Image 1 (cartoon, rainbow, N blue to C red):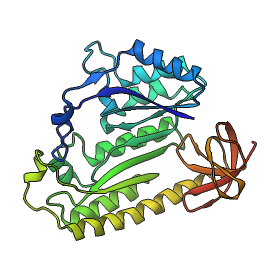
Image 2 (image 1 turned 30 degrees about the vertical axis):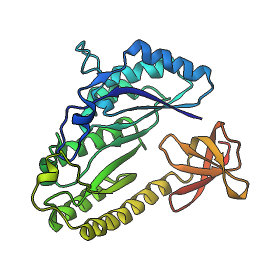
Image 3 (image 1 turned 90 degrees about the horizontal axis):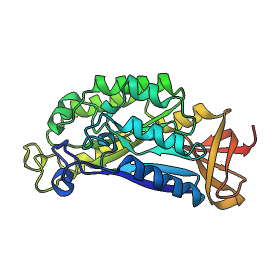
Image 4 (image 1 turned 90 degrees about the vertical axis):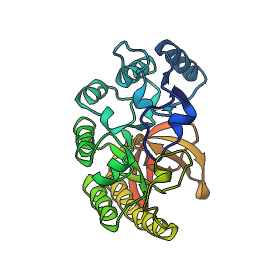
Length: 288
């Protein structure tokens, strides 16, 4: 049902917690003609969804120096395979600007799920991480996406217990994710990596504190995700069914990456009327 297309490798952001720039080197992008060739082959093989992946797909095209950026790649992929769902991997928040949203909003096969890596909802922690945005810029990206892709799901990653993170900074993260109304949060306790600047920072947070903060943030994330899923109940969404589960049901995902169960067959992409939700899983019936 779902294929992966790696379009980029390497990174030059040098976030203080990350070893990837040292391990993977500078940005290398898959040429557009090769990407299109692979997408056409994916269609011929019968896949229904494509996930565009890479170490940092937001930097696609930076090494070409011809002015093309990720939005140009994505528009070309959507045009080349109009019946294939195109789902994006993780995006750097600054990628999402007016031009990005305006260019891509017309493609109905682009999945309305955008994974914007946040890492912290505290500006002071973001500075120590050497992230290239602040919370205000992140929120601007979220608002642009919701304006151009109404009802879209904005999902994210967060690191808790970064060196020096105070209780007040952690509370700022909790308050920010509530304000942003994120649809799903992946939470990671900070993990030290030799060779990174963060490994040498003072104020390393105790493991027990990191895991306690992760637990709290996961609880908040689960509630936000349940709220988002509840907001889809009563609507009809295209669902790509992937596997059978208990009770004679089949499980798949909407374009927003909401898990759905209904009586269906793996491999089909059909409209499903969402009737109810149990936690973060929606249940529905095939049909309009």
